[in-house]
Image 1 (cartoon, rainbow, N blue to C red):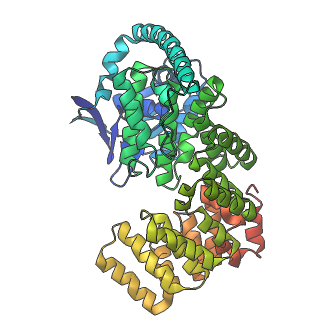
Image 2: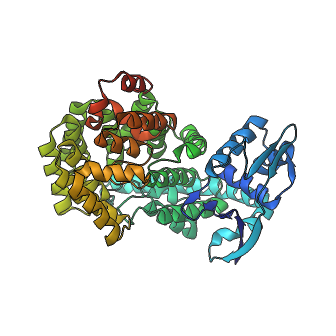
Image 3: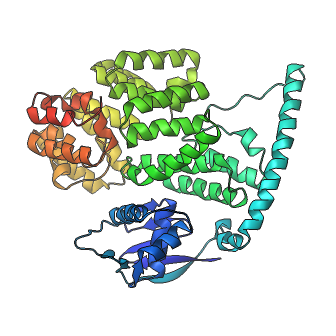
Length: 499
């Protein structure tokens, strides 16, 4: 079935799947931003009033012009547009906005059932009335079923099956409320957002999960677990990009979390999301601590919650608490031995031999992970073992697709001046890949520290804090920043961070 694909200024926009593509990136847009861009693309080079945009994007909901201003600001940021010298969105004072690019429409083809959205909206009110009735009926049936299962279990006739260890529960009780086709979509989407359990964590898999969740919501608009699943998928997909675009999703995910917790205050997935947003998106460490503790109470067997909490403890310099927590978990569940958070604890404590041994154990026995090479590259730098740093840097470069010729050029630099020479080149070329030292601007700061260019490092750290790059939170604890720690400028930067 043909779908709309808008083309403008080197971008492609798929409004049905809320995807914005450039020659170098693909971004999943939150609903309001996608709706706004869709309306702009439908009305290129026209003066659009604020009233028309509010009506089109918010569909009759009572919102003020601030909501539109925020959405336009987010879209400008995505398109790298400037309000002063706009290439995409021009403000018309007292009127509204003007979409500048010459926008063309091309057709694409996909078998996705998500393309039936416009047709289904025609009978939206009928569907909602039917679903409210079906929801009530199925809820009654579910209560009876749960009672029967409980009775059989209490009498010893039925034993619950063990659930797989996963960062995302299959939520069978919730799925039981759905028709068989919707249930299959929901459970498949849940598997897609369970990192490294069923599928590889990739943007394509997260986008497919979002698509499946939305298909479920077309039939069951009030099915909260599907909304939470979309929020989880968008958060994790942002994580694959170093959370560089997390700020774009904060409002959307927070609204989903608020809805879920209003319906069920013990919803473990929503509690964990709230903790993650407070931690990495809002830098509110006390709120993050509160919600991690609530999430642990709600999901005591979910490793992801404990791992997130241990990272919060590391950020705050509570190494002994993190060490104790992770070792207790390993006693409770040997599956926790496959996670590398203890390597981070040992590294932050300065116990580099144990950090290396722990990471090497994982490399030898577990599924290969980029994180293993990240930490060994960092430890190589911290211990002045340039050979170790370069060895694992090369692995990361190959995983990023660098060819033999390019790697050979870096190796020549290494032979001349060690890891500092290589980092100097990465800094000079403004390399944006995650090669073990995070992503820009913080990676550039870390390269500059190794090369001794401390003024450049401080400038990039200031930029990272301004952008709320989550990895800047470890400035207090990470020994990589020790060469700067006594400077007044660095102490002023630390004062801008929560602790």
